[in-house]
Amino acid sequence: MKIKDSIEGCFQLMGGDFTNAGTASSELKSILSKLGVSQEVVRRAAIAAFEAEMNVIIHAVAGTMHYVVSSEEVRITLTDMGPGIQDIELAMQEGYSTAPDWVREMGWGAGMGLPNIKKNADRFKIDSVMGEGTTLEIVIYTRKD
Amino acid sequence: MLKVNDIIEKIGLDIRVSGDMYKHVTGCYISDLLSDVMAHSKDGELWITLQTHPNIVAVAVIKGLSCIVITNGRLPEPDTVKKAESENITILTTPKTTFETAGLLYNLLRSE
Image (cartoon, rainbow over all chains, first blue to last red; front, side, top):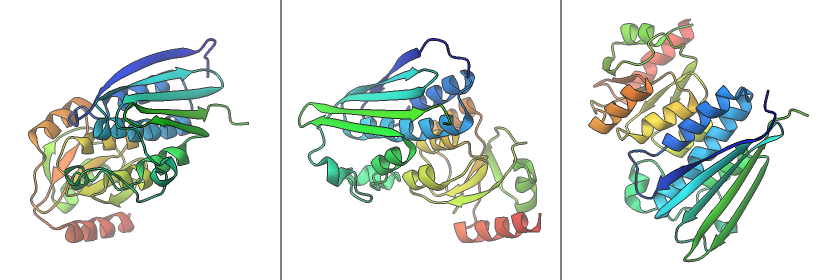
């Protein structure tokens, strides 16, 4: 990969905007590919970003997806104005979800999102304040060693 | 390896959105749970689902799936068609059930 300095950018996310869901993650995927990040890292970053983007669209009013790409890592930070997560440990359990029924009918809200993000990240951190919002930090190493 | 257009011809699927027809079909994944597809489908697989809303296109883009097949006579929503056209994702439909479609596809992919 030929990145000298770090490259960064930001996407705005609108809560409830299911029609455009995935646009930010698709764009991030193509940005990473163009930067010459390895396919495996692109794949993992795109999956983690998309699951996190869906969480903002399903649960929050609005949010942002910020990314920084360096020769060391891809760092994706999602900050939302949402309800917050009451029990992060519970939310991390596969199968646990607070999504409403109509979202489940769309095939989301199976309680697989956060575990799937964790699985694809090398480092993963959640900070949440009830009634204010949630911040997710996803880091994927670009170096193989 | 079979391409999307080979599959369409051999098992008789209706084309709703014509994307990259020469994409290789590496296998098949079947699920109506989008997070399950996000977690378990693999690059190049054909995806059979009952879901018709626009998010299926985003899943196919992110996961690099070769095409989407909607079964049971269901049709993609207009917004789904628009999104698939702009993202160059092929959407196919069939009046057959998921079971029948999967069976035909299984035999086809195994015979290759």
